[in-house]
Image (cartoon, rainbow, N blue to C red; front, top):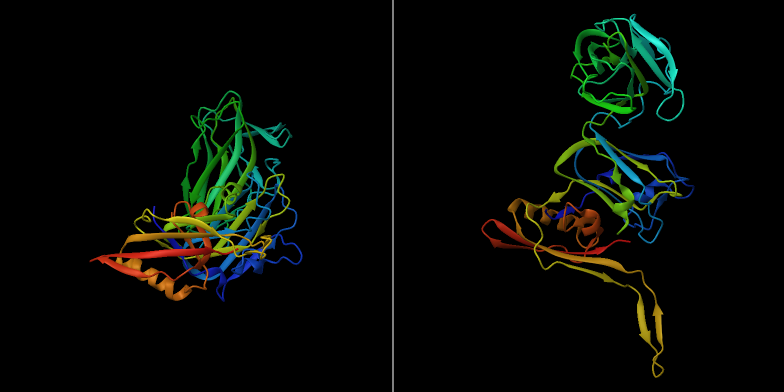
Length: 420
């Protein structure tokens, strides 16, 4: 656990561009680029839907911190709200389903095709209670020419992760052979050029049984891959029957592809959420995808930060302090002692010390002090693994002073006042 310090926001760069999929009139997205957290962007109706915030930095740059903030005295996301972060050096993250716009399939038509020895046994109930699933059989004991696949080539990018997923279960006899999600990669567009096949999960032992289960496969394409074919299921024997539903192919970002984060839980304390990485990553395009709960009326944010970060090797020393300051006034009238109050809005104050900084870390702290002074905004956290609780957006009460305490060790005192 080290100290986290970031003093440059790449999202504010002249070449950076931001876009969002939902915006309330008069509360535009540019608000997240101002230091004032209370200057907000707000979405329209949110609820259990996804809102995407996209960032193009203009060129690939080093990133160690992605952070957002909202006024903690305003409406914060519920505990059901989630956040997914993706980043790429090649293309804007977009996890749209590339297989088909409909979850209902008719093998042999539309986006799906079946092999000559595959039997289409009709529509059956799907996991959602509808009738969009399909039952398939086999007329070949060895599984030859038995498959369900795409009818058209999918042109893709090389050296890029793709995720394949479907629901499947067995009916009648369970398969004793065959695979799910076998992928053929081609070095040319539209199934031309050199072919490379990679088998997916075996139908035997993969967990396929009479219960609907979700199966997922992640594949990073070869550097020269331009198109692919996916066989959602193939090679099962005569007498075995399978049911399939809900096919999805999505391009995944190759630099950051986070799991769903508990947005509401993170922001509940001080209105902060942050992603931190050591070592830093290099990316140009980012997407923050916010999914609310049913009770979330809207989403609002007051700050977005994407930047490099110093994460010290050693943690802050004991003796750190946490406090609050009230900018309001408090005076008593002469004689009567009646108190006249002008309420202020209290802000947090943080103070901690790094007693064992390396020479390289000290040089970065000096750079931060010169860049931010006592008026420029920074993001700092006492514990880099818990930035939402131990950190804040703010200014240095006094720019850090460096003291050399040993031949290769330095001390820096950090004192911050939270921005509201």
